[in-house]
Image 1 (cartoon, helix red, strand yellow):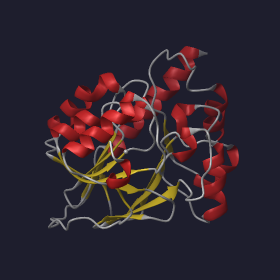
Image 2 (cartoon, rainbow, N blue to C red):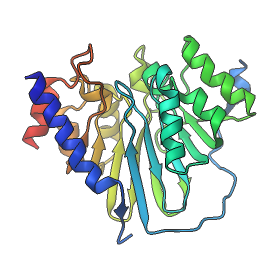
Image 3 (cartoon, rainbow, N blue to C red):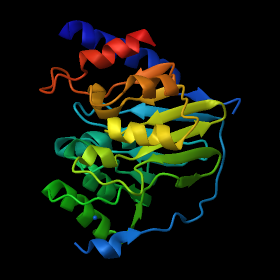
Length: 274
């Protein structure tokens, strides 16, 4: 069964990368001083191109996604665990990335933000989006210290906010501004990115509670590609939610033979039914 699950994941990722590498469109120290509720960003001259590229960086049991935008800007969603910072940095440099215009830390778990302090230190950074929830780990503090060193601020990401990207619509669907939970995964930033007729849904570790909130707030969450929540765990990807998204492709980010048993068989079975 384990071999079959890994084979399914590898097949899905291999198939998707054929499409995503070039998609064409018919076209928190003193935390209070770091938070910035404004959604604007410094204007950058845009030189448009026809393509958008989405890279699911191999950071093992974690997330890191590079999106190269048609305005020649870059978005990075998460940066893997603490020991994956250099992996992410090296990958970005290999793609000729010198600036991260939009840096998204979906939530404060180490497998998503562990390498982010190194990314912040290494690259010119534009806007930083994080959910307004604190954590007490050294990993989380390392990210805030890196932000402080560069004099940057954090934009508190909440549902209904749009990330201002020229030529692309990037709407934040979660977390809800009224979110109250002891589970940090429930605060995951979920982004619906639309480029022409192509739609991506990036879930972080969003679980059932977040998915229910999204279904209650949005009538159209259909997407061509979904990065499934929480590494293919059965705590995410409810049948009703996946039916509403109705994806052509589903990406699961995980480490081989991970201790969590990801992806869970329930998730694989659901994907097989779609």
